[in-house]
Image (cartoon, rainbow, N blue to C red; front, side, top):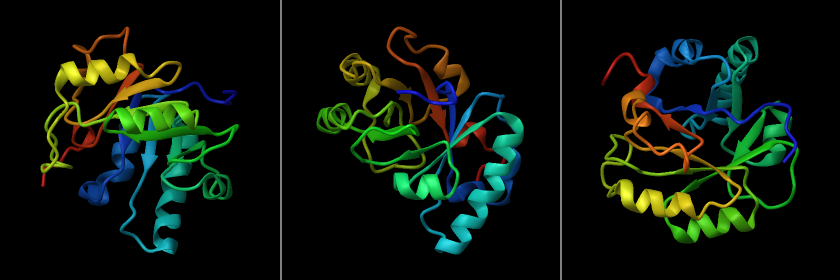
Length: 182
């Protein structure tokens, strides 16, 4: 794992609920944070345009940006990495979503650099999904091996401070970074 950027401890996951406030939310992130750009609902040209706008903000502010997509697209779009199930060694940052032991085993097999384990707590993004809770989350995090663990799902700055530093590298959120609640 050789990257130009250290792996951030604070991550913003993009979501349509940000609406027009997304660029401002990215600007408010501390230097050294990360953004996982998703926005799957946009057309390819629209998605590329919004990514480019956010990537410029990220570069100016020292923020890492990952593209939810292929490594090839991440390279083409000049992202710092990619968020997806993918195999092979990469000089880009490689992250994956993990919801259970099976997905964690796959992430280990694919040598992801970091895993977003979710949902830790109840979350507005996935109301239908039962949260893992602290015990199940901690069990998964202990099995992550060399991969960095990012806590996701209902995590706020206050909740993040209560998480065991021995198990997690950092935390991610959506609503934690939104000013407006819709």
